[in-house]
Image 1 (tube, rainbow, N blue to C red):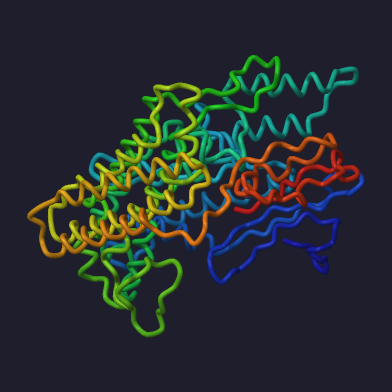
Image 2 (cartoon, rainbow, N blue to C red):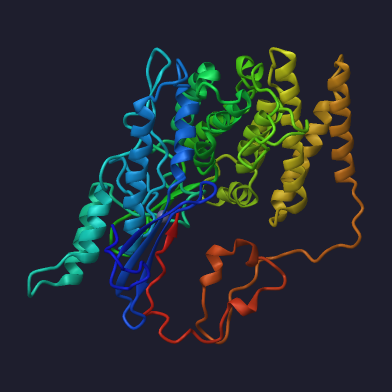
Length: 516
Ligand SMILES: [Zn+2]
C-alpha cells in the first residue's frame, strides 16, 4: 500500500497502480529515466483490474463450469489469479527495462515478458484442465536478463566479456530473446501461443476448442443470467484458436533466425523447411471446414435476442441479422482469420520470393490452391454448414480480389489474379446446383469478371522499391521496419530520413515501456 500522504507521481516511489477501466484494456509498465544517463529512477505500473473479467470469460467458455448455476468453481479464480500474477511480473519487468520476449524455447515457458496463452490440458474424457494454464514465477530467460543487466562482477573482471558469456551460455540452453518485430515470419516467435511447433499446436488447440464447444451451453453462465449473455462466453471459445492460426501462418514463407553476431557460430537464418510449411498449411486448411465453423445447436437454440439494457457491444460477433444472434457470422469471422493471415500481402511476397533460397519451398500459387480446395471442396453435412461454407467462399474471393488489386508486389497481384480466373472457371463448371447455391456462384463469377475487366481511370504510377539513400552518408533506418508500407512508395517519405542524426541518439536508451 502507498504510504499515507504519498503521491503516486512522486519520483521516490515505485508504484503499481490499479486501473479500473470500463472494458478490458492493456496494462502498462513504464519508467522515468534520468535523461543524462538513461538510468531508470522510477518504475510505474498501471495494472488493469478488468483484465480479470476477460480471463473469467475464457475459463467459462472453455469449461462451461456451472452445474447448478449457483456455485463458485475454484478453478476459475485460480486461473485468473495465476494470469494476474504473471501480468504483474511482466509489467514490473518493463519497469526494470526489459523488452518483450516471444521466443518459443525448447526449454518451455522461459519468460514472463511473453504474451502467454493459457496452456490447457485436454483430458481423455473430454474435460479441460486449467491448473497449468500459466507458468509460476519468473522464467529462465528472465534470470539471464537480470544477471546480464544488473549483475555485478568481481573487481578486475572483464565485465563485457563476462556479460557476453552469460548470453552465450544461455543460448546453449535455448534461452534467447526475440521481440516485437519478429512475430509473423519466424514460427518460433509468437504472441499468445504455446509450444515450438505451431502446426501441431494449432491441431491440438482445435481439439481443445472442439471439446469446449461440444460442452458449451447454459452451464457457461450463472443461474439467473439472461441466456443471451451466453454469447459473451461463446466468443472467446469459438475464436480460441485465433492466435495459433497467426502462429501457424508465420511458417508460410517464414524463416528461422536469431540475432546472431559475426563470430558467434550461430546460423544467421534458414527458411522454414518445406515439410514444416506444408504441415502448417494443412493445419490451417483444417480450420476452414464448415463443420468447425457452426455454432452448436444446443447453444443456438438458447441464444435469444438480447434483453433491454444489454445492448450489443464490440466484444460480440458481428451480425447481418439486426439484433438477433447471427448464426453465420461466427464461422465467417473464424474462417476469415485464417484467410487473412495466409493472404497477408507481405506474407504473399515472401512466398513468391522464397524461391531465391530454395526452389523446393511452397510458392504463393500452391498456398492459394490449398485454400481453394479446403474451401471449395468442403462437403457440408447439413444446410447450416452449407450456408456457412458459402459465406466462407465469398470471404475468400473478396480477400483474394483485395490481394490481386492492392498487393504492393506485382508478382503477388499476378498470381492472385491468375488464381481468381481459375476459381471463376471452377465455379462456372458446376452443374445441378440448388437455387441458393446457384445464386451464390453466379454472383462470385460476375464479381470476379468485373474485377478482372475493371476499367481504370488512369494507369497509376507503379510503386517500386526505392534505392537506398546515397549522399550524404549515414541517415536513419528507423522507418524501415516499423513502416513496411513506406519503403516501396513512389513518394518516399524523405522526412523520415533526417539529414543528421539527432544529437546523443546513441546514448539514449531505447524505450522499453510496453503495453499488454
Ligand atoms: Zn508488455
